[in-house]
Amino acid sequence: MRAFRLNGAAEPLKLVTETDPQPGKGEVLVDLKAATLNYRDLIVKEGRYGGDQRDDLIPLSDGAGIISAVGQGVSADRVGERVAIGFMPKWTEGPFTAAKQADALGGGYVDGVLAEKIVVPATGVVTLPDDWSFSEGAAYPCAGVTAWNCLFGGRGVRPGETVLVEGTGGVSTFALQFAKSVGARVIATSSSPEKAARVRELGAEEVIDYVKTPDWGSRAAEIAGGEGVDHVVEVGGSGTINQALEAVRPGGEVALVGVLTGFGGEVNTGAILMKAIYVRGVYVGSVADLSEAIRSGIRPIIDKVFSFEQADAAFERLKSGAHRGKVGIEIGQ
Ligand SMILES: NC(=O)c1ccc[n+]([C@@H]2O[C@H](COP(=O)([O-])OP(=O)(O)OC[C@H]3O[C@@H](n4cnc5c(N)ncnc54)[C@H](OP(=O)(O)O)[C@@H]3O)[C@@H](O)[C@H]2O)c1
Image (cartoon, rainbow, N blue to C red; front, side, top):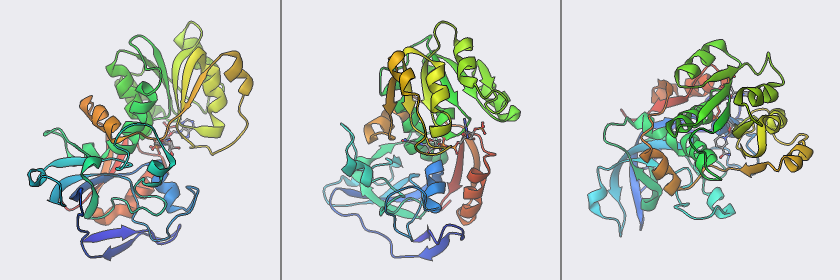
């Protein structure tokens, strides 16, 4: 099979030809057809993800394809099934653990999906709806599941509540779509008027320019009315968390997922305490979450799809910040 491997932070990916992997007991071989990129993939490529990492890793966590062979104990009927692969294929359901995190694809020492084939546990994949493209399926494993977990993995967003989503990237766009699908109001932030217009088309009631309005947290609370927004999907990290805490109402929830502006930083712990805010860290989700998220039927917003040979250009597209929704790569099509 052909695969791309990391080749140094500033270097193009290295195209290699390797022996096809073979499925063992309880595993399936998936012929990959599409992958999508996440911000995590950029920082993995640049060696900034944290923790130990193999230098020549096959990158990318999010893939979809067709089961082409099965190992012992897996029904041969599954050959031909169109599937999306879980971000942590061994986390089928139940509580999150460090061991499950260590199995996340495309990071640490675990090869990812920027290859023509991959072997994963048979329980680590989810069947795709017949009319979905592989790119749509590949949009879900990290960004879709994370957004799903943010909105429904905690106290659960209810109809009529207000959700604040930050920016117009993969996670935030999914969160906007999921929130609208259950009848919630959505306020978004964006640095780009063009992207703001597209986000309004998707149902955002108001879009605040977070560059022109540095105190966008109070503005979001004002728009929400009452005591503030019920729920924040916090993707910014150290540069945005205090605005998120400003926006949320007493007793509301901040789902903490992102690090776009960095890790660490000074957090207004007083606000968390005085407003009794529920701050919940989210690390993607399980294969069961992937299944539920896909069953929502929400079709992902795909920004641009590159060919396999243009994998480096896909990374550049994500890095440019010009994208809205998911950047994809077609494989073996
Ligand atoms: N914990 C988890 O399980 C998990 C899972 C997935 C992702 N994440 C993290 O979540 C974050 C978002 O990931 P993604 O894949 O959705 O990224 P992405 O697609 O690259 O989205 C980036 C978008 O965020 C917006 N943005 C950038 N700086 C911002 C700021 N200071 N304030 C508000 N918005 C800002 C920009 O929107 P505009 O261009 O509209 O301004 C940009 O397009 C990343 O930090 C990623 O590592 C975490």
